Length: 103
Image (cartoon, rainbow, N blue to C red; front, side, top):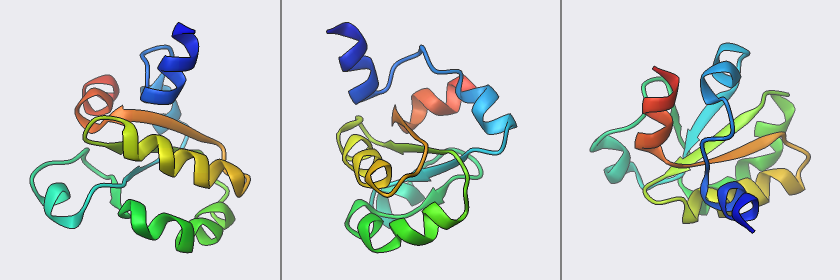
């Protein structure tokens, strides 16, 4: 059960620093206003309501994706959408946790 929750809400069992070094992209699915208030350096802002319409172009990049948001709920939804398009994706959960993990 704990593993399921970590996967759903973003846990520390994933080495985000290594994923980024290997070329993973971080997609922040919060609103543009939230993103302006702080975000992981180098992350892309694609709000959750636009993920589905951009999923195919994200998949075509062939890169691993780490989704982040404020608490992990929206990033989990985005990860599910991207996974259904064949993207290798990890739900990073709260953006601040991923930011600390990749330093």
